[in-house]
Image (cartoon, rainbow, N blue to C red):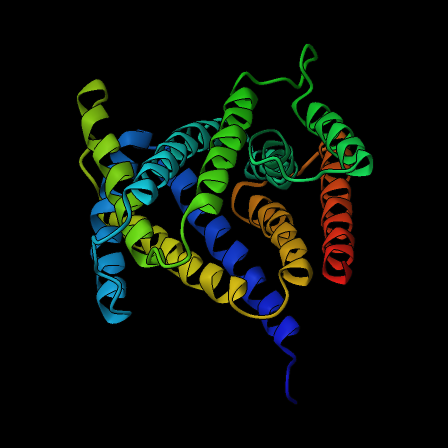
Length: 294
């Protein structure tokens, strides 16, 4: 059976989300024994050669990039490093599904940032969806009640760092090689981990630790590959909502690997965030359709 481009793109996006969640799960296992900075550093040592080989294979090793693009590349790198540190700090302390659920607010924050900083048109319906989506995040975080964890605020900080990354990515020229950006980002995150190593106790690694690190690195590279495939296959408006399959993978792996069952409030908040995100995608598709007719 011949699959349509949209169906292929949806499958690629779902695999992309699975790969990133698998990486998160392996890193969470590692955090039981070692610090996030040691894990970030060692994972990067494994990942960077893979990304470099990928860039060479795709003939994307070039540093002849416009000066204005370099500005946005470094802005993107700053967002990515911040997102990695805040997200992994939260992941080490709270359930995988909860951290992943909070990250599902990213499409809403990107829409908000695009309206505020890129002057993109956002109608009142999408602004209402953003507000309701933030209420969903508040339900997941639960400030001031027994289920609250300060590390949920780290996950929210990661959301804003990812938003910075995505806005900077939008400003990049289309001729900037994606493999180059990925490799620079990987090097920056690894260097940050190395810089922070003196602040933590170095733990000698067992064969199990190395096995988990290698699997996490492979998952990261697969996630990158399938994210590129997803964005280059089919219509973005059809494919983008499938990023929410991350919640399915996160809940499933959280239950299987850590016996973390999401409670009713987490599920309610997650449903609100995902519903408003999908609605926002829908409204954006309608807006683009109107623009094309004009």
